[in-house]
Length: 508
Image (cartoon, rainbow, N blue to C red; front, side, top):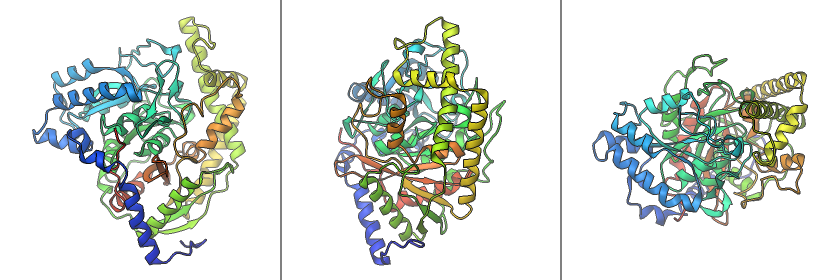
């Protein structure tokens, strides 16, 4: 590496890249060789090609996905809503001739709506809720040909990095059911990792695409703010922190799905820059010689598991072997101020939403309908003022400027995705003996790297490049400049070719 040199020779770097590729491919290979269904052997684009070639029908793929969901959901608990009849009706009525025609799809059960079908947001407070609107993202997903057949589990309101709640229960990691699948898109990641389908809808307000991608051994890209539609009824989530996209097995699926869904929606307050070329076209292109900043320490100084640090270091060596320049560097951010501002924005939104629902339904807010984490956010949000919100917004804008200046010198930032391999279930959720502030520190300690990109609006991807000594996935994160998903897709495609992970599957 340049800057703070790693002291490795070119020969050692190439040797490390070969070892890294082997580490990425070995676990789960036997299970992959026993695959007998197209869902086991093809990504979403591959399944769509089978449909176009008339080797399989949309109905056959849907039946296979439903069969797998029914067989595996009791073990891993990833299905929040079953919309099987909706999917079958879509096929019977004729699917659009989009790029993913006939490929099964699961939505995340969080603020993503099909008019008349349940969305419960992982919460007893929203039990039985049936929206009157269909999300613009759903329209685009269906226009691309995907067949929606259900919704995946989330923590209540997507507020934490593990998918455990009191309405659907705990979602378990297919690599080891005693461990978390991550959150808040843990249900989506568990379904894809278990082989139910090759890609699924996910959202990210503080790492909720990248955390479960890391925990479940998947590729997970968080797009730039304003890239993918959020509404209706709103075109912005958590003051601009939240975005929509997917968790996938392949880089090309992520790129093609973003092509199908990106672009401003009616009434949007802002939109990410329009790409010059399709994202899919970037996946096979050489990224050039990138300047990569290697960030190994958590921004707020919390501890990082040595295995996660080592995964990032090996990723850096792999990048060097591919011709990139890597040096240890990190932006100087006031994480105490940023953390406080984040809590103000999220808590204000959560409190307003819960109080408004209470008025509409007449249901009293309390532990009978909301979990301790959510009640903590509601209490915190009720204490904030309009000036607090404005100041918080100013703090995050300042952080975005700091990051933009830092990235004038770097194309990409490389770091661990999370600070530890997937934790045992029950470690992150708020227990009666843990206060709200303590929970915030504990949850933030598990995912100290992922929230910055939500605050600054930048794209970031978790790449499944490593495994722990106990056989659990470890993701490595790459952050790009705002609006520059293209560079990440070029680099992601290069990494996927150099250290392929497609045959690495959990033993199920």
